[in-house]
Length: 93
Image: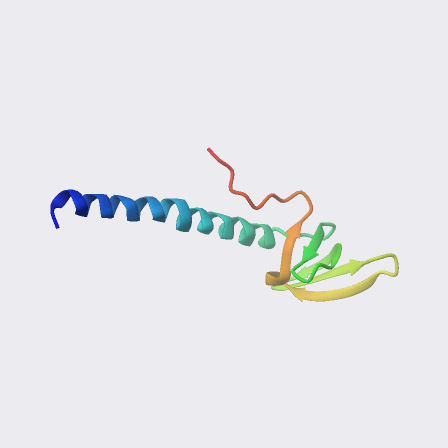
């Protein structure tokens, strides 16, 4: 194996890292930040598909109301899939 092949292999690994792994990390960080910024009054969707309005946030627990009958449900923050107006795609600079 000569040096040219080795340089091409290293360059291919670097491109793979930046294209796949780094962009996935940015997306995960954006979702974690969104979950940490949840506040009362926000509209959320859970991983299970339930939609409601946040009533209270207590550490890792989030209480939200669903529907007109105002049923309150508590979930962990990691169970929140999205927030109204949140775009999980990282912004390009």
